[in-house]
Image (cartoon, rainbow over all chains, first blue to last red; front, side, top):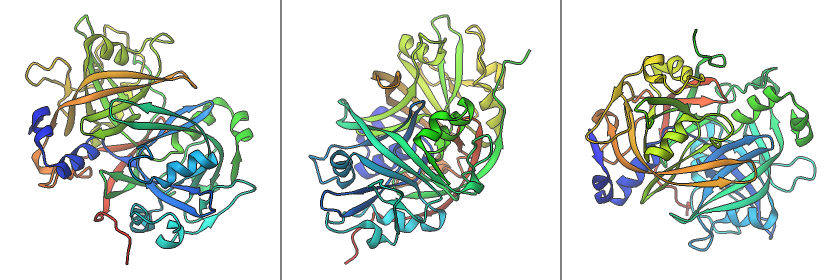
Length: 205
Length: 205
């Protein structure tokens, strides 16, 4: 089946959202933990987290501006400068999805959706106790994507909290045993099973 | 286990690459098809494809500049203005991984790695016949990420080629039946199994 640019344009808005949000393939399921200036913790699911580079260790995320509707996560990141990225645990996809509901700013999604706050040292942003892979982030900069009004938010990894049994001596992380999940579109959650790992590819003689 | 910023900095380069490339979770496995000005087709695996917006339908990818080492994909995109994004098929992860070897520019990875070129209408870039989900893209712009010298390459969807049996009436795409795959780090491939889909989340009364 061939879907043309004109077909896409004339689609019902929800159907277009569903198709275009899932057409790129699987996306990582992460919960972003922040705290507001009023000391209310916030937790929100994001599927737009992307690796930007290893040295310095940088992670990006795509968001929309705060001036359209309240975006507590981005507001808290800008105000506090720190946030956490936590893998969604396999057993808690429904609770993780529930964090996308529009809770008022004096409500913590940790409590409302059944997650537990965890703190490490003097790092101000809350980690998710139930996640097996959690990253403490420092906000670096926002790059506007003017063509559609979105923003690439860049942060630098400050620390990683991870169970020893899911990371190998070489630094490979086992996403299957970490019980991490993938997201397709806006509302479908996928389990991950390791197929295979391959060596660095070289041209065959 | 807590890995600090200083630990990360002092890690062996390969181990750091492995950890930081897999810490964000699962990434989509896609093959990008292009053609050079000398009419040589090119195919390369990318795990840095990201949804940017649905209206207009925009997709981004992270790459490095062409002036460091030859980057045939990005060079071809800039010269020709069109490219394709094709989901890696589950049965062909090894062949897909092999496209990351440094083939010379007069060699087509389609032939070298065992994929078949497919063309639709007058669209100049080659699609991958073996993929169940393929997207024809028009290059829009490059946004430099100055902090680490990478580039966000933005394109607009021109058309989608997809089997009817993996897309629902509402526009949900079934990545399990499409036999799409996820990638962790630089060399691990994961199978996807649907866990659940949830309705749009609302605050519970």
